[in-house]
Amino acid sequence: MLRTPGVRSFLLPGFAARQPFAMLTIGIVLLVQHTSGSYGRAGVVAAVTGVSMALFAPGSGRLADRFGQRAVLVPGVLLHTASVSALTVLALAGAPLWALFLAAVPTGASVPQVGPMVRARWATVLGGSGERARLLPTAAAFESVTDEFTFVIGPVLATALCTGVHPAAGLVAEGVLTLVGGLLFAARRRTQPAPAPRPARKGTPGAGGARVSALSVPGVRVLALVFLGIGSVFGGMQVSLTAFTEEIGSPGANGLLYGVFAAGNMLAGVVCGAVAWKTAPRHRLITGYVCLTLATSGLWAAHSVPLLAGLGLLVGLFIAPALISGYTLIETLVPAGIRTEAFTWLTGAVALGQAAAVTVAGQLADAYGASAGFVVPLVGTALALATLVALRSRLAPKAPGRVAARGMGHRVPVAVD
Image (cartoon, rainbow, N blue to C red; front, side):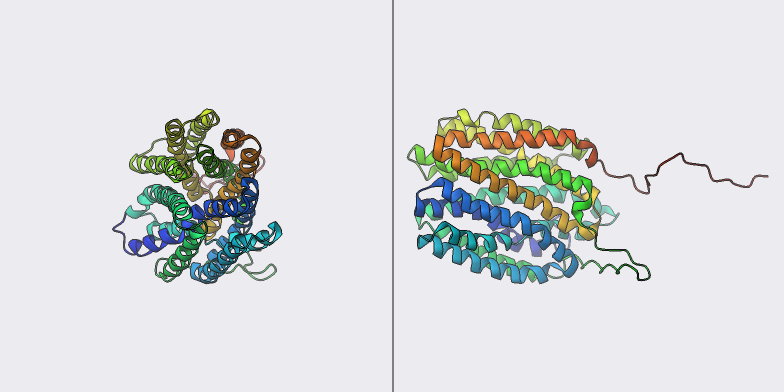
């Protein structure tokens, strides 16, 4: 897979440019908590950023499908760098909450959707019906491993910088990586998907009507709801682990604990990519969510670093199968022209779930302690599992050439001798 021409040119800059998703939330939480002394306040600011990202990410993906990735990335990374800088300065100056909100909105809205863009490039490079097409599931697993490796490196790096260098160092590093990685990734034009042709207007010859949104596909809507649960795990773990290590007087252990959790995700992603699965992605998604819900059920009762590390590793092991299965299902549910947008709906759902979890977990940690914050991942995954089981039929890919119609089919008459 890695020997495919052009692949390596976008992998490294793509890895650097996707760091915001892993570093931004924890960087905001650590900085605002340091300057304000409140996890609830820090969680609300991080949540505004996450909600803004979730709302604007699909539009970014739609524009990338329409005009090309470079046309969206270049202004996006410049805006993001400026917004992160403004948020950092305001937080250090002790600005009021409304001012932090004003900076948090463009910060989240401009987060570059590099992960979905890389996945769209894989589909372009490996697409078709030849031998390369059989590498698409491997590419999906590889991307999940890359995402999880990002979540291993990002939070640990942000925490180390915030606790060892300066409370704002995590956000500063996030902005620099976004700028450099995003511009380098945008420069790799040869592997980016070709912009989708502009649909004809209604009333003109050959009109196809308005451009179809990926969210109009029922399966994409179900996956977006289900991925809210994955976001609740990320957000709930980030805030609750930070609060837990503060409670025990070892704030530096936060990066280690979250790194163990993310390492479980990465290890599971490697295994998923190495196995030739015979079960359908839909069934793997349900199984992964059942295991994830069971694993999160014990987090609230852990009161020691070794026990919490073990449970965090177990939780991490079941996230990657769910992510891989969901992204694999997208390949079968939507056409290539709206694939980047479909990926961004899932990424945005994770961000939205993370934002809600950060807010709720922060409030619970302030009021009742870190253990209460760990209830958030359990509730989020349980609700997502119930949604998945109830709507699983909508994730079945349509058979090619099959047309739904009312009534009974009729045989076409033929002439016989």
